[in-house]
Length: 440
Ligand SMILES: Cc1cc2nc3c(=O)[nH]c(=O)nc-3n(C[C@H](O)[C@H](O)[C@H](O)COP(=O)(O)OP(=O)(O)OC[C@H]3O[C@@H](n4cnc5c(N)ncnc54)[C@H](O)[C@@H]3O)c2cc1C
Image (cartoon, rainbow, N blue to C red; front, side, top):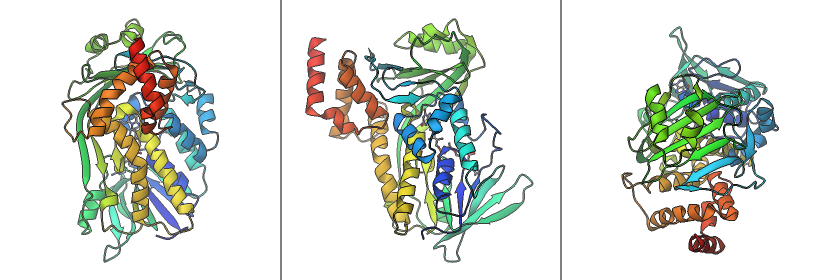
């Protein structure tokens, strides 16, 4: 795969595809992004992103990367009304049965709805020279050289049923969890990538509400995590249009109801009454919308020994995480930043270097998501000594973080993917946890 070539095609115009297009526009004369959906002219839901109806947190690290790719984007999103606040001081963290100590730590975060964020990113991408979105086109397959050593383009089907080919010097598959690259590889005579899969059986149910503007006090977001004893979680997020979005979630088949009458009862059964208290007198602005997320899935392209040239994969198409940890958009942004670094490096980018570098990006968030999920006895998977030790330690850290702002800050920075998780095990932090527990 060469450096700057002529035409690149990106499969999927969701967050991963848009961020990929932004990066490729620096290196390719033409970048075509294909999606089966019609693109809303401004801010709006679309079928291909059903997750947009649920609380969608942009992690602190993700906001930094977005601002690198699109200078001033987060300020623009805040100007458009997205609530913002401090990562610790502006969020009510309810973790492992503890109310985490709140104090401003100087780390801003913003809380846009998914349609607002994606709409603003899409507008920025469409303003780039050489970039276009081909909407309402279904991606049918790849075209390749006769020996299948290299991909040469993409076949797409328009709404009239006509199939055409878009030639490409590079194709990046950002078509999400349903990516068909594994199937296409097989059809071209390659192996499918090995897959790591951890079943979690997560269900979401979300409902918009009209609440008093000060319903959350000074907070912008309530985050109540689940524990093995209470496998139910919830979030309430202030949104840019003055509404509040309430998401209820459950693990391992204990799914929240989409029946309007039962939504409130599920909230009433949560281990803290914060969510139920704010919504019980609120005005629902629509029926609850459900979503099921069966498993964390990681496709290990970096382990393949053969792969066609001029094809890469990015975003959920490589790795999809339990959504409760809010990592997907941030990891897609980090992967896009990795692609940019490799393309800028002066050396030709090969699929081996790309997938190896992306695997390094995924390792930490994958470890956080699957490690935390393995705290649930019903989740099947290998529990290394480290996973068992961390899962025994974290509830203790949360207990100590109820009064210790240093520990609270250290923890939320790790969940925001700003710091590596190993830092939570530093001797000074272990000591604080131990002292905190003794005091309690
Ligand atoms: C319930 C839920 C909650 C989530 N919450 C968060 C959160 O709080 N924070 C966070 O960062 N992430 C969250 N995520 C993950 C996040 O939404 C994704 O990681 C993010 O959208 C990046 O995904 P993607 O662009 O790779 O794929 P997707 O967002 O799945 O987009 C794939 C795109 O490809 C298009 N497409 C697919 N197949 C075809 C085809 N054959 N032809 C044409 N077009 C096609 C689709 O229309 C779509 O536009 C959540 C996910 C879910 C499911």
